[in-house]
Amino acid sequence: MTPKRRNTRIESDLLGEIAVPARALYGAQTRRAALNFPADGQKTLGAYPEMVRALMEIKEAAAEANRRCGFLSRRRAAAIRAAARQVKRGGFFSEFPVHALHGGGGTSANMNANEALANLAEEWLGGRRGRYRLIHPNDHVNLHQSTNDVYPTACHLALLRAWPRLEDELAALAETFRVRRRALRGERRLARTCLQDAVEVGWDDLLGGYESFVRRATRRLGNAVDQLHAVNLGGTIVGRTEDAPAAYRRAIVPALRKATGFRKLRKAANWFDAAQNADDLAAVGAQLGLLARGLLKIAQDFRLLSSGPEGGLGEIRLPAVQPGSSIMPGKVNPVIPEFLIQACFQAMGAQAVGEAALAHGELDLNVWESALVFNLLDAMELMRTATRAFATRCVAGFEVSAAANAAHTRSIIPQLTRAMHRHGYSSVNAVCKEGKGDAARIRRILTERGLVGR
Image 1 (cartoon, rainbow, N blue to C red):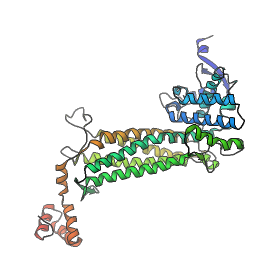
Image 2: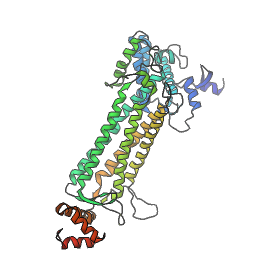
Image 3: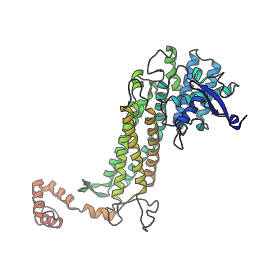
Image 4: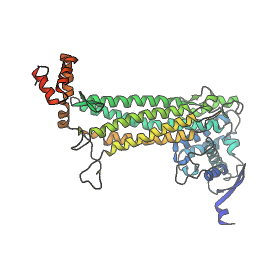
């Protein structure tokens, strides 16, 4: 036997025989997918634990539903469930080599899960990998399922699983703004509109606005994620009912609730709609994009307000977390806000991908959910990391420059606004006109006419 034969086993599928690594849990279809869509260092299904876990939970639930309905023996169902739970515990991610953006609407990912579980369950029952005599990927693991309902459901479950981690960091950021707002109560600053001087406000006003936005955007995104509890598992091929018995269709979502712990899971209102459209996923991307735009604005504000140290606004000092230049001594850059800003760029890109994926679905099935879900998972994880860094390494430790803020709040515009409240817009505007934009001259005229105190 040649070395190649010792390291591989031969499996066959619709297209014929193919060599599969001898110890691989996956089989022929996964091997073809790995060859068709070479990762070459890019992310595979195994790089997304939430998706692997979601697929395992679906297969576990399907095995239980089929057992309860009498379509799968107790022995086979137990082996499939045990295998799924073993994979969920981790350590098998290399067994999911399918490229994250594989073509085919998720079929390769679904078959990767089917083959891995079939081989693992086969061994549980005393068989050998690649034989499929006791547990077959299609006949048993995928019984009464289609990629059309498995994959969209897995996408929903993965995002439901990922969301709380980002939600926690957003809540922590909002709380950090609340703490800093209270600590800076009484400190004054110059507000600006169109980057021009406006009126005097408190630092607690600015930070209170930031806090409010983070809480609002978090609620909006959470509401979008909550809609993912509607799943089309049981809808099989494009949503029709002929491919799964009624008893199974009634049992599958309750079984999935048990397997996942997501008690709010429910059957999608219309299975055909759920197959045709991925707007629930795109809605999460849209709200993530809105969150990113708002956080980007806040991070940009911190950069601008900290600009200097001598040639900028210099109204706040950010924590110095690392040297800022390889050639300019003493330079320190706002690297933490810039980290968040770039994370926001990525999240905005995920939103754009979602819009494209939604728009390019055709006829009976939207096959672009891979681009949607994996970009969203990446963006949510990056936003989680960057939000935590921004809260703990920037917002929590920035300092207000009393001297710079005192100088800026003496700007002429706040004085004119205060005078307007006492003497009317027309009177004060006439002084501005007479002063011809010269702040010192305007102040002198205001004082001479008793429109403002010295």
